[in-house]
Length: 90
Image 1 (spheres, rainbow, N blue to C red):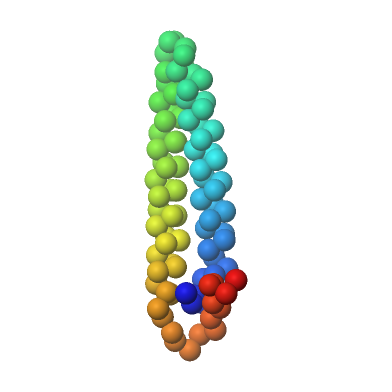
Image 2: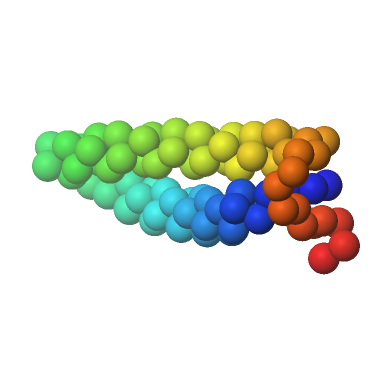
């Protein structure tokens, strides 16, 4: 698989962002789980807010994963006069 050097440098950044978002998403879900035990209205409101944030993070993770996959597939068979590196040799 060949990919331009510029796009190859972006891929690790996107993968790092996906990893960080995934960890943050897991943290929010654990907080929701801990607060769900409480039955008071304040805990319920906090859980709703955390769930909205978790849903937004999940959407960001999906979008970034699709972006990363798209970048890789766009350059899989492309061969123009740019400088390329071969990812299969590394």
